[in-house]
Image (tube, rainbow, N blue to C red; front, side, top):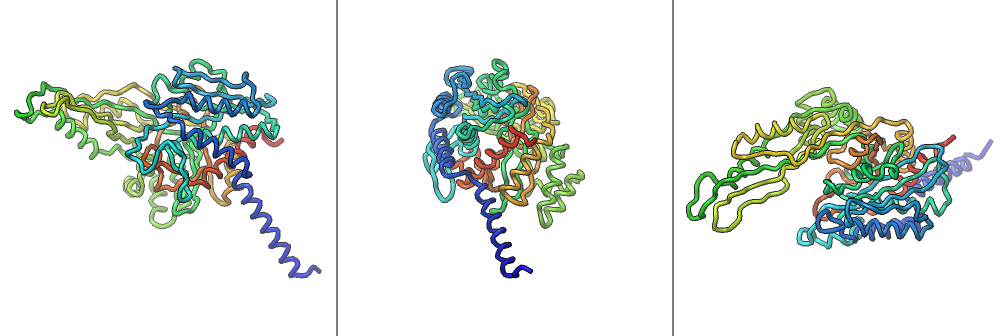
Amino acid sequence: MPNPKSVSLLVALAISFFAASLNAQSTRPDAEKKLARDIYKEFIEIQSGFTTGSTTPVAEAAAARLKAAGFSDSDIFLGGANLRKSNLVVRYRGTGKLKPILLLAHTDVVEAKREDWSMEPFQLVERDGYFYGRGTGDDKAQAAIWMANLIQYKKEGFKPDRDIIVALTADEEGGGPFNGVDWLIANHRDLIDAEFALNEGGWGEMVGGKHVANYLQVAEKYVVNFRFEVRNKGGHSSLPVADNAIYRLAGALERVSQFAFPLKTNEVTRAYFQQMANLEEGPLKQDLAQATQGSQEAMQRVAATSAAFNATLRTTCVATLLEGGHAVNALPQLAAATVNCRVLPEDSADYVLNTLRKVVADDQVTVKPLGQPTAGPVSPLRPDVMDAARRVTESHWHGVPVVPNMVMGATDGRSLRVAGIPTYGIQGIFIDRDDVRFHGRDERILINSFYEGQSFLYDMVKLLAKPAN
């Protein structure tokens, strides 16, 4: 009979070894982490804002790194809608047994002004356990990770059963005629055609420092912008009148600010809130469960707990830009605003337009849509994608569930889905629920979360690119 002390020691050693193995899997080796950070820093410090910057230098920097790593010119494409809006597409060749997988990230960022930030926004700053800089979360982290991991696959001689395509694209934030995904679909569909794609839109969520869920985005809202405009004859400022264009616009915007679209769930968000009910504790748990059953009272309470839950439950519209007046001593002849709406897939753009006109209730205020986008389809829950996400999540964060969700914003995944390429948003980068700084001041993500995301995506792509026999 074995000595009990020896057995205990062996068990302890086994547990210690298992824990160490899991920890070792949570981030990549130091050399790979350094490469990812170096690429990340290079990308962050290239000013690629929609109006004041260019994505072309990012694409060129990525291409240079790929060529240095041994990728051939024939497998690297650079091009775009104009010289400032270049995209990069690179193909890592597999056996061709399976159709390719597309790994997507955008390299443009929302504008950032130095006077608005507590630091230089276009430098990668490491402080208090965080990476700071415009694009650290949206979306240059994933762009850098895709590049670093692809270079590592090349170094290892990895031979997948499908080609791995990485596309770093322009103008996801700005959209319009220079959007890289739309341009590639229209002009070079063959370069990015794939069985499915992985993209931004799904992240890991932390609450109070605890890893709660790893999101797999399968649906998203779509964006419709509206121009609110008031025009009148104006006049001398010494002779004010009640019919002031700025006041009329202000009244209209105030009414919009007090209005809320109806609360509701769809197939994706019902499943999401049920999963979240299983994870929560206290009164919110019951409210989440009741929300999935259509309780308006429960949905009201859930929406009040966080901006993210509120945006998941309804279409939202918010004023984002203002213009008006032409002189300090003249009554305004024009006052206008842009109202940005994030629309549930089941709500039509016409419904939103007609609703806003009713809310404004002023025939002196015109409300016109800027463009006419439509919702995209929901990506099916592919068993291979779900299985890979769950297996890799479990290996990195034991006990953390993978939760399919609908992202409250919008991504280029909509265009891919419309084009027939199912797209899944997943990153493995965990962010605090109450500290999402994308598009805002002092954008940041946790340093450790960046490296965990690198490791998570390295493993997930390998699983999907070369399935076990």
